[in-house]
Amino acid sequence: MQAGRLSTARWGAFYLLLAAGLASQAPEQCPHSCRRCGAAVSTVNCSYAGLSGVPERLPSDLTRLNLSHNAIRTLAPEQFGALTRLEDLDLSDNLLAYVEADALLGLWSLLDLRVARNRLKVLPAGALAGLSRLRLLDVSGNEILGVLDFTFRDLAGLRVLQALHNHVVFVSRQAFAGLTELRQLYLDACNLTSVPTEAFAHLGGLTVLHLHRLESSALPDYAFLGLARLKELVVADWPRLETLSANSLVGLNLTSLAIRKCNLSAVPFAALHHLVYLVNLDLSSNPISYIQGNQLRDLLRLEEFHLAGGRLRRIEMATFYGSVSLKLLDVSRNLLSTLEEGVFHSPDALRHLGLNGNPLACDCRLLWLARRRSSLQFVGGPPTCGQWDFLGYAAADMAELLTCRSPRVQPRQPDSVWVEQGHTAVLHCDAEGRPEPSVTWLDPGRRALTNAGRIRAVGNGSLEVRYAQPQDTGIYRCVASNAAGNDTRPIELRVRTLSKKKPFHLKSWPAALPSLSPDLREPPFDVKTLLIAASIGFLSFCSSVGVCFIAIFFWSKSRGQIKHTANIAYVPRSAAASSNGGAGNSMETSRFTMKLM
Image (cartoon, rainbow, N blue to C red; front, side, top):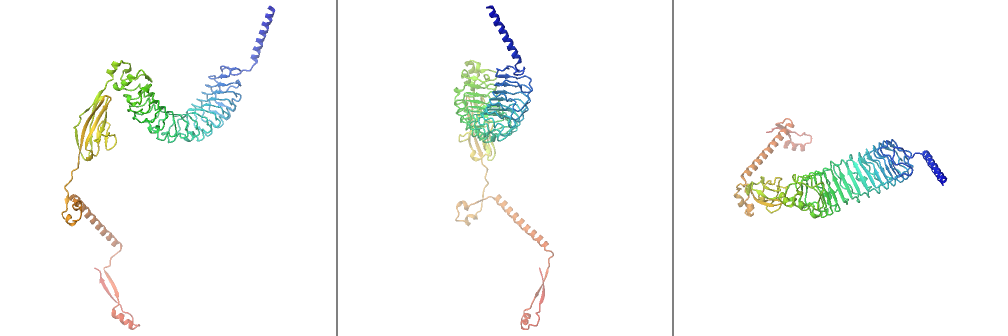
């Protein structure tokens, strides 16, 4: 029994020594600096290994290879030819400046390729050959200057292309030809001066498009006309983009639109009205100061509206009328003095509100927030008015803190104002209240006056009537309103007409024209006008006569010296008769001299 056990122990030791010997003779599968290496391992991580080239001894059945954060400078043709099962290759954060043609040939199974943060300036034709199954390509953070024609023609299965933070100057018309399955494109073209509309026309299946850091000052009309399936569009970091034309987004049927960190001074209502399926609208970090009411009424499905980090001072009442499903509003870090309940179509649908970072006034317009504080989640923290976290007060204390005072119009000028015809009249309206009331002017027909036209309301609450006419006479009303009520003051404007001088009548006119109507028989004459007309006629006559004399004088000078005498030859009648009788006699002529007077 003991002998059998000893024999078994000896055979076990022999097998262990044999295995150790065979292991010492087996070839090494990858460098010592790589982690998780071995013939039976499908993932090899060689990041931060100090490699200057791709390792030569790698398992042939490898599926994931991480070569990031090394010093690899170039890729030779068929560098990975033996790795036919590789699905994920990460070459990010190296020193790659050039990828030779057919460098990736043989990677028939590759799905994800990351070459981010290298030194590539161009992707040459053939560099991506053989990657028909590739789904994701990341070339962000390089120095790519342009995208050439047919660069991606072999990537028929590509679905995500990330090309952020490059130096793109141009994109060729056929740059994206062949990308029939592309769904997401992230393009950063800081030196591109226009949207590559013709190149985008090849991306009919695109659903997500991000355009960052373009130097264009406008989004041209029909810029995305071929992208009928696009659902998400992000335009960011365009410092020169100040407005969107009405047709810039024609052809799109978006559900999410972001125009961030641009230079928009107003909400582009004209470009947005046809986006009836829009759910998310983000206009953050733009110098927009005012949102007009009832301009977003066509966005019936809007659920999120972001305008954080801007210069917003006022959101007008009924701004979100029509947006019955609005659940999130983020207007934090602006210049708002209040946010009234009347801006919403359905305040009860609101679930998330970002209002912090605004200089809110502590008045009754914020009471609705106090009533709904339990059902609201405040993005970035609760809002404050002054230095107080007013939502933390008890209900009784909040009613005393958030108060309003009805407006009152101060009588700065008389109730009746006179002005000469053709002159300018200014009607003043000074109103006090808490919060500060807004002033509206009504004309004698009770119609509201705007800040345009000859009769217009000016910024300080006054009414200006320029070039006053008799028909402007009437009672104008100043209406001051705030959340606590309103006050009205009528002011009468009277316009003095220009005085008319007594007309001059020619008494003999009716007798000369007895058959004419009374209006034509007694035409009025102004003596002053008559004298001016006569003077002008006399001067015109004298000028004409003078011009004629001068012209005759110079004409006569041009004809030379004038002769004052003339010699005239003639034949007497008797001589003419005798000459008929005798043909041989010569005809006698006579002469006489005339003196010209």
